[in-house]
Length: 165
Image 1: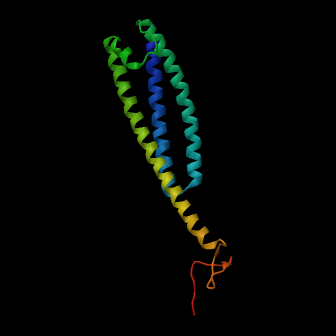
Image 2: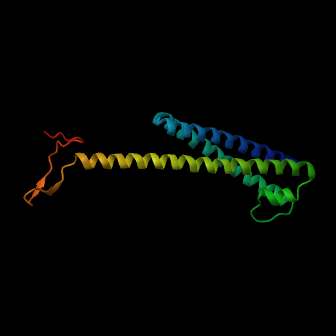
Image 3: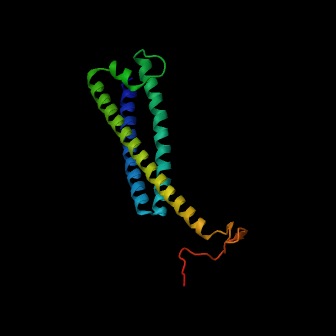
């Protein structure tokens, strides 16, 4: 069953590599947002979807391998990496612990980058919303009270600047 452990290490390394791809794509996404380059952002998001699909496949394989290796060591239920590391012999234990630490660090980094990009997009959309509301308030026809106290409509051709003589 050493083959299962070898496969698990390979899958965990592939997961780490896919997380690095995602980190690069999130950085690309951030640069696109800052540059207001929607086409580049669209391409980065499409590539992120592909990497997420790859990551999900690796996660399924990893869960299967963890269950197989856990059963070999007498672990029951849903097996995670920590209990498996605890009952693994020394050379593999160190390698698995190192991979676990790397994956946890990358996962935390990805969560932070996703949160930062979300805040950037939210603030950009809020700015666009405020700008639209401002221009809409200046260019829409609205009823209001005139000098005689009667309802009048503002002209549709109103502008931002008023020129008085």
